[in-house]
Picture: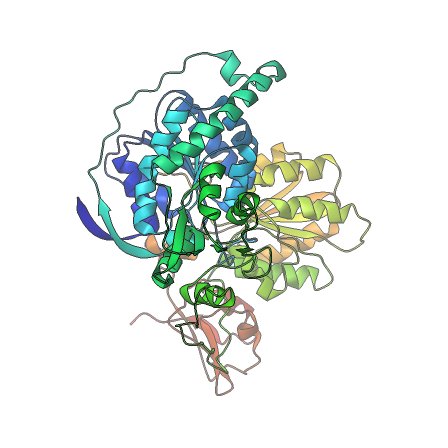
Length: 590
C-alpha cells in the first residue's frame, strides 16, 4: 500500500484504476469533473474513456458496456442525474452483468450549482443501492466495494460524494493498479433488456425481491455499523459522520450510515435501545425518516422537528451547534466566527479578455435594457453582472425559456445566450422547437471551443476527444441550419463593429435568428501559446470618460481620473476599439 496526499476526486479515480475498470464516461460538472479528467490523461490506458455530450448519453453508454459484462463508471454532478434520470430508473429493472457505478456528486450549499439536490432520493426512487462516503479515504475504498455490490446483485450502484469530499485533500492509502483485461460481449436476452410492459412487470418484481438481501449485505460489508455506549445515540451519514466522530461524547452511542437502502430491522433494534436519538445528515432527511419509522416511542431530533436545517452544508462548528441544541453537548467548543467588516465585494467575474464580455456588451448596446435575456449554465452565466442575464434554470433552457417568453405575448425582444458545449448538451432540441413553432427571438451561441467553466474539457466542437485524439469538429452553423434556422451568422466578438452590425440586422428580422460568437477561450488560447500582446493607455490622450472601465474587464483600472491597463491584459483589443478618443493602443515591443 502507498500513501499519497490526494484530492478526493483523484482518490476516486485511482480507486477506479485499482478496480480494473474497462469503461468510463461522463459529462463535466463541478464537483465531479476531475475523476474523468484524471482517467483520461493516464498513459496508455487499458480502458476506454470519453467525455459524452450529456449525462443521459454518458449513462446509456456505460449501461450498455455493463450489459456486455465489463466494469464501467459514469460520472456527473447531482443536477446531471436529472438529465440521466430516464435511463437510471429503467436500469434498475434491466440490471447489469458487469459492475456499473454511477457517481453523482452532490453540492450542499450550492457552491457551483443552481440547486441543492440529494442523490439519495434518486436511489430510493429507483430502488438502487447508494454509497455515501464520509471522507476522502472512504470515498476511495468505497469504489471497489461499489463494483463488487453491483456485480453481486446485478444492479447499478449510485455513489454520492459531496463537494467537501470531492474537493478536499487527505492522506489516502492506495492499492495497485489493475489493468483492464475483460472483453465485452453482449448476450441477447429480450426479456431482460427490452422493457416492454410484459417484461417490465416481471422485472419490477425481481427488483423488489432483491431489496431484503441487499439491505443485509450493506450491513455485513460494514458500510452501515454502530457502537453502543450509552442511553443516547447519534446517527449520522456522509461528511456529517466524520464531524460527529470528532465531537462525540464518550457515553453517546454512534451509528454510521454509509450505504442505502437501510435495513429497517437492524436500524430499529439499535434505535429502541436508546432514550433519545439525534440524526445528522446533509440536505434531505433520508436517514431521519427511516429512523422515525422504526424508533417507536424514542424521541428523534433532526430536521423534521427543527433541530437541524434542511439546506446548506455541514461543518464541525455547525454540527456542534446542532448537538448543543439537542442536548448532546454542554457547549460549542468552536468560537463564534464574525465576518470581517467592510471588505470589498469580490463576486466571480469573467476573465480579462473573455470574448463573452465583448458579446454581452454588444448585445446590450443593440437591444438595450428593454429586452429580455434568458441565459444558461456556464461561464457566461456571469453575464448577470453586465445586465444581460434574466433567467438561468438548467442546461439548455435558455432557448426554450426564450421561446416560451416569445410566445407569451410579451412584445419585447428576446435574446437567449448559450455556450457551445451547453448547446450540444441540450440546446439543439430547444432551437429545433423554437424554429418549428415560429418563435420570434435571437439566439447567441457563445462559442469558445471548449467546456470552460468545469475545467476546459473538450467537447464535439473542440476537435479533440477526451484522450486528445483529433476528431472532426461539429459545425454549429450546419446544425443550426439543419434545425431550420435561416438567419445564421458567425462573428468574431472581438470585432465590435462586425458583431454590432450583425446584431442590428438580426433585430430587424422576424423568426429565430442565430448568431454564433466564435473566439477561442482566452485561457485555452494562452495555454496554446497564442500571443496577442498587451495594450496600454496613453495618459495624455485619456479624458477619463470611463467608457473602457464600464466595459467591465478586470484588466482595466481607474486611478487619478485616468484609465490604465494592468498585467491581466490578454490583448483582445476590444477596449482600444471602444475608446472614443483613441487613447488605448498596443504596447510597443521593447
